Image (tube, rainbow, N blue to C red; front, side, top):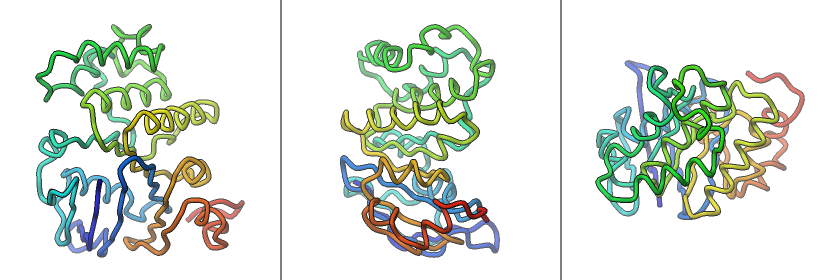
Length: 237
């Protein structure tokens, strides 16, 4: 579904991504793990068109999309749940969800809203509440629901567990698995490497802008280097 080849992205003179390659097969969950500052969020923003790459190809369902603005990649079937959730704080839960469907012109938006309320019952309860007044976990559920309202073929999740309590994290990862089982392909950026690898089919390890390891998620989880850096008791960089 997604193929990235030789992607280079810079902030001024600093190369945040130094020619990375990654593949996301249709129907899979692929995780991108690494320490803070490794370039994970930069990769996600470049793929969806929030940042323009200096070089490389981004191919989505056979079409080159590098350099396309984000609203066009959404129209093609790609949605990003950004780091920090970035819900619209002064709009209601319902209005946030409707914004996710802003590019749609079909007659099934109300049906999809009902599906989201069934998936996230707390959002039905809070539908008229301002997004900024929700708890962190509720905001994350809202951010995911908003992204799903675009009916994406590929859902990109950037640090969905950040700042959440362990029980809420477990719920969020359960939701990610369910979304995937219902047919949506997932690219997951996550510093909680243990949880990410547990639900992923394939994984990439990003360090200082370069992919240093990749393979089946089970194999990556058993890799001594990964265990020491991301899964053990050692302090993260």
